Length: 76
Image (tube, rainbow, N blue to C red; front, top):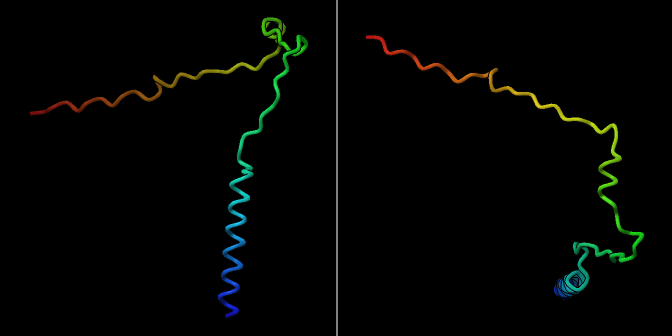
């Protein structure tokens, strides 16, 4: 009798935990309120024109380092 009571109580606790998780999920993305004031607007042109000392990316061309294999010539 004790075993059955424990199983019923455990099942009820799991059901209640599942309902609580369903009602209030924590994986929902947070929503921020958007500001519509003039101070919140960003002047992107002035940001781009005032940018200094930005890091540069170097591109290394390896197309000639590993040439395609030469086909074997057919000998008679």
